[in-house]
Amino acid sequence: MHRALVRLLWRALAVLSLVLAMLGLVLPLLPAVPFLLLAAWAASKGWPALEAWLLNHTHFGPHIRSWRDHGAVPRRAKWLATVMMTCSAVMLMFMPVPLAVQLGVPAIMATVAIWLWRRPEN
Image 1: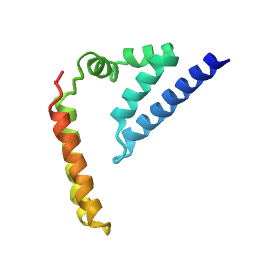
Image 2: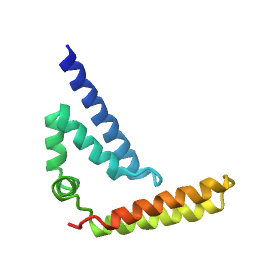
Image 3: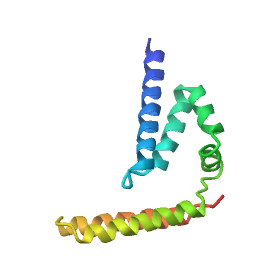
Image 4: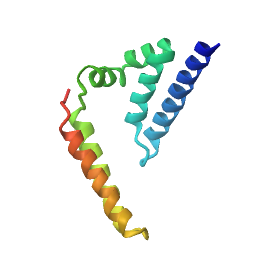
């Protein structure tokens, strides 16, 4: 019973992550890639057929395998993420939010951008 529940929870996380990744493909503020990577990871724990489907997907598969094998991120994805974070930071400056948010969120995004650009490329 315990094993079946654990497998069910991994599957639920995989499906939820996959749904969020698909929403991220059409919603500009929701990142698709982290949720896709999370879906593949969760599927590897409890749904081998879904993991195989993701790894063999013509569009997503090579990127997931590259991330798993080398922690690599395509240069195009790095540029896109950097541009999107910059646009978000600029828009945030014109929003009526506390100064701590206007400074803190861009600082976090800058940290993520630095980390991202230090990743190998595929």
